[in-house]
Length: 252
Ligand SMILES: [Zn+2]
Image 1 (cartoon, rainbow, N blue to C red):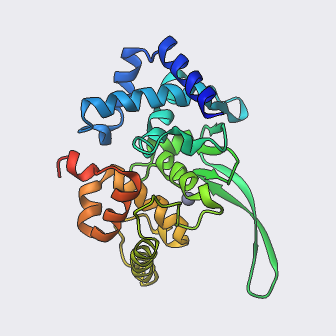
Image 2 (image 1 turned 135 degrees about the vertical axis):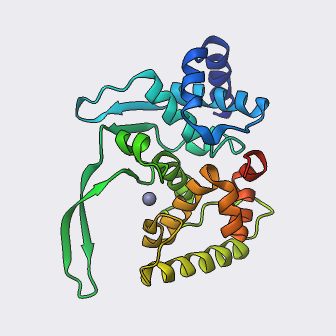
């Protein structure tokens, strides 16, 4: 049914557009988009328009979403797939936005087989096939994180099953090189966190390889020069995976 989808997309692009003032205001609020060349900015705008047409936004607990909020999420969600295509997000359609961090019930089994149930505060969440859930407050006010890119990086990771830090790689990419590079970086990072030293990345990245991939994906887009300096091998793998080189376009 690829032709039907393409036909629908062409029709959306022909009949709809994002208001100029809204676009300029939203882009101005996302400084990491600076440096995108004009043709990529145009493609990002088209992807965002299609994203808005194809995905369903829901405000949790009656939270009222306006056009600028929806567009901001759409633009940040589309940046990672700028050169991969929107089809990467085909398996699900809903985005739920909470006004602030939200509680989820978590059940964890310990080493003795005992299940512990507790409420956990989250800024974002996503499951295979399910919606992306975001805290608007975290999306706007958390200076050191990009919860939107984080959750959509998980979505890309989940395209081949559970989030495990190993998304489906492109042909020509080396699985072993990816696994080795990320294992070394992750283990080194966990070691620093274990020794309770300051970390440049959010220490949450030490939770699991999937979290390391999502957190360093945020850094790849938001602070690419520093990511490349600190994690050159990981940066190179991400550059191959996202088919973008943000450090080349953003001033150091
Ligand atoms: Zn995560």
